[in-house]
Image 1 (spheres, rainbow, N blue to C red):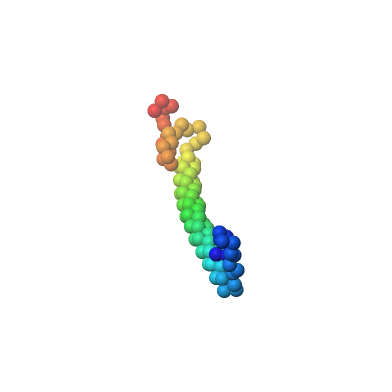
Image 2 (cartoon, rainbow, N blue to C red):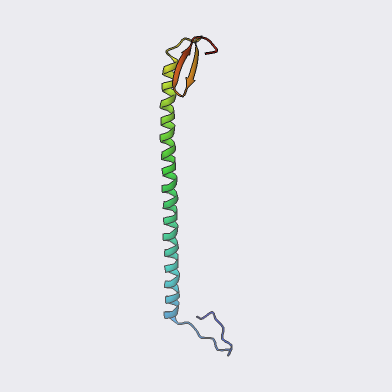
Length: 97
């Protein structure tokens, strides 16, 4: 390589062919880095996208359960005492029941 010094004081000079090879090497390294970064980005995007999709589905399921709970509460008067387990609502006759 042209940048390595020799102890005998002789410095070889790189010709056009050597400069082309070094440039082609740098291009290849850049292209490999670009491909690696693109693969890394795709992995992050896909992974995060799947996580977001899962969160959306779980929030939709939670909303459905809450709507069911609301519908069950509508069956009772505002003064009724009820026991709620999840979305199941049951009227209690006495407060201690």
